[in-house]
Amino acid sequence: MIDIEIIRKEPDIVKEALKKRGTDFNLDELIKIDIEKRKLIKEVETYKSEKNGISKLIGEYKREGKNTDELFRKIAGYGGKIKELEEKLKIKDEELKNLMLVLPNIPHPSVPIGKDESDNIEISTWGDIKKFDFEPLPHWEIGKRLDILDFERAVKITGARFVVYKGDGAKLERALINFMLDLHTSNGYTEILPPFIAKKESLIGTGNLPKFEEDLFKLRGNEWYLIPTAEVPLTNLHRDEILKEGELPRRYVAYTPCFRAEAGSYGKDVRGIIRQHQFNKVELMTYAHPEKSYEELEYLTNEAAKVLELLELPYRKIALSTGDLGFSSAKTYDLEVWFPSQQKYREISSCSDYEEFQARRARIRFKDRNKKNRFVHTLNGSALAVGRTVAAILENYQRKDGKVIIPKVLRDYFKGKTYLGE
Image 1: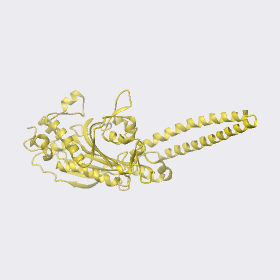
Image 2 (image 1 turned 120 degrees about the horizontal axis):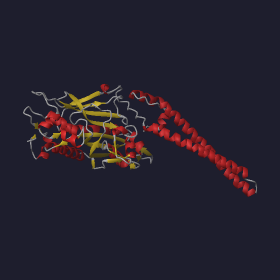
Image 3 (image 1 turned 60 degrees about the vertical axis):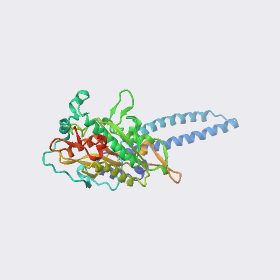
Image 4 (image 1 turned 180 degrees about the vertical axis):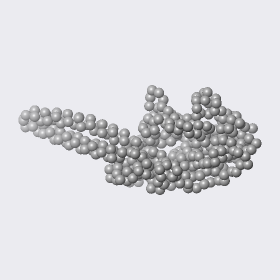
């Protein structure tokens, strides 16, 4: 959530930010409602002040033996007027809150200006793209040939966009989760195993609600949702808390399954395990000092990149343009891994700095050296999306004879085995 004072004092800056994002949000309507709300607050305070003055006068009249009937009539009138104004104020306050909750974050000045993903900027690349002396297969065909990915039985059990991992497929998924957790915890992240269900307030805190409700799976009969990412429980670990300045940064890592309805993605990545309704992910989360958050974004992104480098998977780092930036993000880097069958890079990690946008919604603060409460900056990133990592390994490590080499850093999890499906 943006600070309302920024909108009041510098509305043109916010309008320019919205223009860069390409959003049609009506800021003038929000400003109008805010003015009306503040006017109502002033009227309520004026009537309450006058009512208090009459109450004192009644006491004086009583001490002097004067008639107070007229004063009581005035107080009754003021009471009715105050109640009427407070009802109007409640409505305006709700209108303003609803608009503030769907107002996107302001992009950082370093974010490239653009209309969509075509305007994203490549920052760097890593690794050599392997040249095959045969036509590389897509990961779903490799998985079927090795009998480690079963899409047909997943459809029978649940439906489209699900997969059953079998044998070495299941072991590879589990090995990657453990490898990522072991790596990040060895680098100072505290491991968390959170609930996989979150209540409405938690999803409001991260910015998933109310704007993206159609992308969520809601449990019937209550305000519980299956989490779309570990970002939700990790961000809400310290909701409504005041941290100590010396505790920042706080770095967390969590493995969770993730559940997404994938609304609006009809026809995209219908084959394979790139876009699933349920998938595993290891997530990094940081509560940072506002003056250090962009240093922390580089640190977090590099931590995610280490996974790809240790797995020896070619990737590139992309700075998202204003038109491709997520709703809550002030700045985002994507890491995209190379897929030989598609001859292109595909997103495998998204690392974002939300500045105080989420912390303001979730009321997460810290007490600075001047004893002043300030909002922390929150950051998170995938490190990594496990299913996509499996897919990238199958494609990049495939051989002409049909075998798939197990990356060296994972072989201890396979008791030294060299190939999948052996």
